[in-house]
Length: 104
Image 1 (cartoon, rainbow, N blue to C red):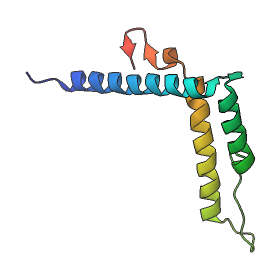
Image 2: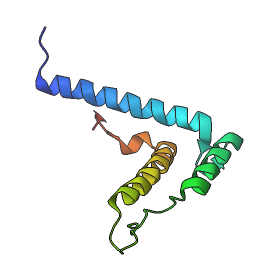
Image 3: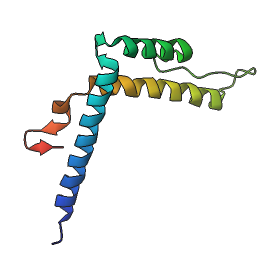
Image 4: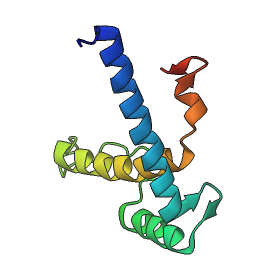
């Protein structure tokens, strides 16, 4: 039996929602919940912040000539993205990713 494009899209949306749901559950098991981090979750996040900063989107990093150092700036943005992805998983809410008829 062949599936329609709409059915294939719905299957893919369901797979993505399941992955988001599973990631959020696993990250919360490890790190805790926002405002109620586990002991180890707090240690890891504190270590990441101490090592990489990354509490806000980093500014451009300048080289010795006052020009943007694109490699160091990209590296700094990468650190920010990793830490932010942890917080995104901890703050994930399923109702923000589903509609009244199912998945978006």
